[in-house]
Amino acid sequence: MTAQTPILPPLIPENAPFSPEQRAWLNGFFAGILSMDGGPQALSRDAATALLGSPLPGEAQSAPAEEDDGAPWHDASMPIDERMELAKDRPVSRKMFAAMAQQDCGQCGYQCETYSAAIAAGEEKKLNLCVPGGKETQRMLKKLAADLEGGAAAPAAVAPTPAVPAIELGRSREHPVEATFLSRLRLNGDGSDKETNHVEIDLSACGLTYEPGDSFGLFATNCSELAGLVAKRLEVSTDEPVTHDGETMPFGVWLSDKVSLGAAPDALFELMGALASDPDDKTRLARLAEGEDPDGDLMSLDVLAALEKFPAVTPAAAEFLGALDPLQPRLYSISSALSADPGKVSLTVDSVRYRIAERMRKGLASTYLADRVEPGSKLKVYVQKAHGFGLPASGEVPIIMVGPGTGVAPFRSFLRARRATEATGGAWLFFGHQREATDFFYREELAELEAAGALTKLSLAWSRDGDRKVYVQDRMRESGAELWSWLERGAHFYVCGDAKRMAADVEKALIDIAAEHGAKGEGAKAYIGELKKAGRYQADVY
Image (cartoon, rainbow, N blue to C red; front, top):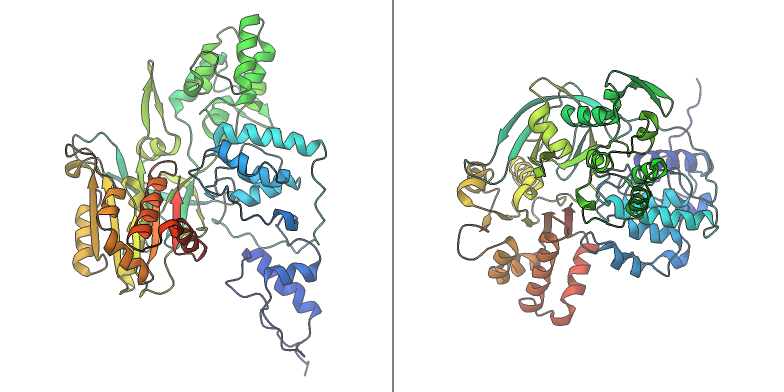
């Protein structure tokens, strides 16, 4: 009889701050070097890194002690110039972190801090992956990357080569799976200024799962009309094969599936400037490439508009493709819960449409879901695991949710999950929009959740229904004493929606409530900071 090797219990606990791949690698590594004699203990990240003497797999070089700065710029509502000022005396890698959009949305395939660390370590060469940061982030990263090339940062230590982790399909943008579009239903009533759709997607064939608070990534395609107009302007047939980045495919496929036709990137202005023969065109294009706005129209220049603005400049197809940003996936907050909606996922999506001059501009994924897919269409999708945004482990913990407009999406998920698990802690939702008659999303469903006890309190704010505009932060202040009592009972506070205005206004209202009703005075802001550190104040903003 062959003796069996004792099985070492996992040394890295499930709640340790590692990715699944890092946890699996570490457990295997320590299983080979530690004996059972001392009764192995679970290891922290610091202890694991200390024993390894180098960074963990998939992780950039650990920041030196002087970089343990608390990232005061990690606030999505803070303008980039303020963020960069806070980081001005930090190493280049931290300045790169400050240059990110601070949303931790995951569209780039990283979090803000890990994307910047990967660039600084030389592991990531693409500087244009931060979708919400847009051009201002790209320009700052380009400048900081030049500093790195000038020797401003030390080379990263080389990590031990780990075993290649198993690929988990549908869990990252690199490994999407195929799902089936089921339906869309407009949530606005007749007369609304908005077009918002409840979208349902079938996951039963791909088996993809998710948790409340997770986001759903999908790969949309550009509008065929827009792609056709770009090809026509360049005088290239959409059927003509074009080779770019080692691949050959019809020009129309490149334009519809592979490159972004949104905001014209600086690289396109640089290319067109190099090709321009008119001195005035060359000067204006050079200024545009540097982020200047010589004609006051920079914000309206998508790729087609940039080409039309300089009709004398016509790049070759392959060069043109090389100057464009890659077409990236879009992420949406999930508005369903598998416990209540098995085998499918739902999204709550505003369709973005606006007119500039004679042309209608369209949001990429929002109009893809509204116009360009039909029931039965196959979609490339993945689930983006939530980063610090999710329900408390116990259903006995109260939750306060602030989600106007489509910001209600994750809270619909929360409430459906809490109802399915018969949570008893209480749930308070602040919801608002323009008009009650046309923009009260999920009215009947919220009423059912109230009747079932899953939704304890519903506070509504309508900005266009009266003489005075009323917003969710106004309703918070009106209920300040009660809201404070919920916080005193241990409630978790959540906000979802616009980062620059709404979320910032909501946080200010909560600080004021803590100062007034919690008698925190000047310490109210620090109190909210402690809630964030404890995971009791969570934001999903964009």
